[in-house]
Length: 261
Image (cartoon, rainbow, N blue to C red):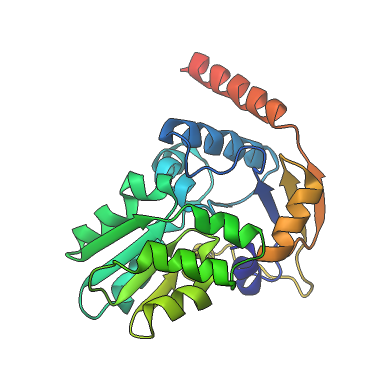
C-alpha cells in the first residue's frame, strides 16, 4: 500500500505505522482490533498528519466506521475501493473474496457486494500471510496452499485479494485459478481514491523532490526490516515504539474525552 501511495503522491511525506508487536489482527476479536486502530489513529494525529489510510483489510472492516466519525482528518480504508474495482471488473456478477479470518468473518466485503446484487463466495486464507512474510510467495508451498484454499470455488469471474499481503501471491493464485478469473487487489485502487480525493479537496501540493517516509514499529525493528524488504521495502528511518506506551497514551486520551462529554 505504501508503495502504491508514494507512486501517486511522490512529493508527500508519509508516516507508516507497523503494529508488528500485535499482529496478526486477522485472528483477534473485532473489539480488540478497533481499540488498536483507535490507539494508532490517536498517535498519528499527535504527529499532525493530514489524512489517514488504514492499510489493513481487517482493521478497515472493524474500525473504519467509528474512526471516520471521530477523526478530524480524512480516513480511508481499503474495502470500499476494492468493492468498486470488483464491480467494474465482473462481467457475470459472481465474485469471490479471500482474506484473513477477521476480514471474512466481518462480512464487510460480502455485504457490500451483495448490496449491489452480486453473488459472493468468500473464504478465509490465513496461512497466505505467513508464506508472504517468509519470502515464499512464488514457491511450490504457496501453490499447494492456493489449491487447498481455492480449488473448490464456485463459478466466478473476479476474485478480490482482501489482504494487503495477497497481491504478492498474484502469480500463484493466477496459475491456480486460470486466466479467466480477474484478480482485484485493493492497494492500487485505494491509492487512486486517496490521490483523487486529495486533488478534489485542493490538498494536492507536490514538491519537486521526493517526500520522506518515517516508519514507527511496535515490534523488533530488525524483524520489521526483514519482512518489509520482502513485501515492499523500508526506505526511510525506522523508529521503535513501545506498544505499552502507545496503549497508555490512547487510554488516557479516551478518558479525557469521555470526561469532557
